[in-house]
Length: 249
Ligand SMILES: [Zn+2]
Image 1 (tube, rainbow, N blue to C red):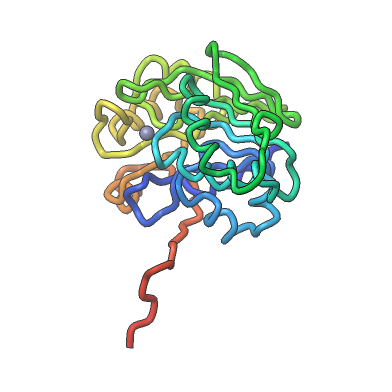
Image 2 (cartoon, rainbow, N blue to C red; image 1 turned 90 degrees about the vertical axis):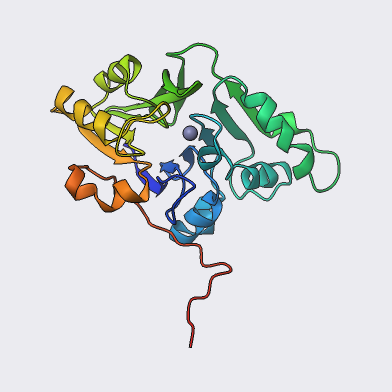
């Protein structure tokens, strides 16, 4: 059994929430800026404070920068349920997460190694088991960066989450292994770092029997989804009203 909640699936540059997919109410795939606010608004404090595992595809703001509140709460003992937070991601993860640690210890001497488990992916195809879900890691390409695509396997099938990536042979091999996939479709045309509607259309022709959802869409692509024939993953569209004038008389 798997429950997937989309806390956000957009880029930083829209009014929609940034990338964050919540599985079984305690596992996150990506953690874009605003994640804590977005999940709290929809599911409440109990859920937002129960996160104990975070998989990261890569280190861009719209996939990573919601993570600091989680680091702060685990180090300072504010978390409701988990005693430890496990963060899994590509090479470079330890350096990035360790940078945040000294700034998020508020008092006393905290032994962060007892609270934070950092796992850098060493080899692709590496597998992690959480609950009864098996998560395997696959190399996808995001411009000159490596992006880790995750295959989330349950007894009911395989869900793929690409993170940000281009249309290439790695993506084709990844989609081949999925029943359903959540795919980066950022723009109309493919570009050096992202697949666009162009690549997504080819992908759908290549794999007519798979359910392929388009996410991470620019406003242009999002508003013209119908015209482009996109299957959009239903997104909780959050607006952060802080600092905004809601009523003006
Ligand atoms: Zn990115």
